[in-house]
Amino acid sequence: MAKSKIIKDLANGEVDTITALKRAKVLVSDLENDGILRWLDYEISGYPEGVAIPSYRKTHGILMGSYFRGSMATHMTWNHVSIPLGKMPDDIKELLLSVEFHESVEALRKLAQTSQDSGNQLGKTIPADLFSAIATYNDDPYMIITSARVVVGEHIISNIFSVIENKLLDMLMILEKEFGCLDELDIDITTKSKEEIEAINNRILVLVYNDNSVSIGDGNKIKGTTIASEIK
Image (cartoon, rainbow, N blue to C red):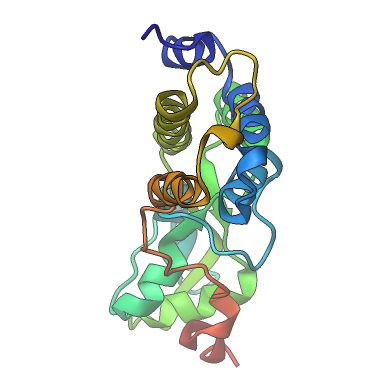
């Protein structure tokens, strides 16, 4: 069977990710599966605060910034360098260096373009009220951090798009196999029994939610960890 044009367009890079997501939403709407529609909606509109995000939208970066050691009169200064973490416990380090992307795919695309145009690295800014806590793990009372930011490579956003598009391709190929050509953005679920529809939904759910690594970031905030309590 010849492949549906919407599949070929996505595979050949002739349609953007947001359009492919919207087409998939129209196609699966008749399946009436909240889990599938929720994933599509989150990728289209962004993941709200407090909602667990998939692992492909999570990464770890490097703590960069500026600091000096010594007194105000006599000191050495380091600018825009990797900030040492000293004896920081692994669990706190994990939270500190984790970076999540909750933005919609369209916002992610613009974020990547803005980063490329401006030369600013992607990542997250560390609040100033955590600087002294970070410094204490270096056993140096004279270390003063003046700025800090966790930065990540630009490739992370490309990776996010690659995962989303691959999931969409798998989803569309399942639908095409079960319902035929998809180019009219319509599927006839009356040709399938209730059990068959349930099986199709389950197959799609597995490929959409096939990462069970929800961990860092699911409601966790740096200010709720030991690192925050130590600055009090």
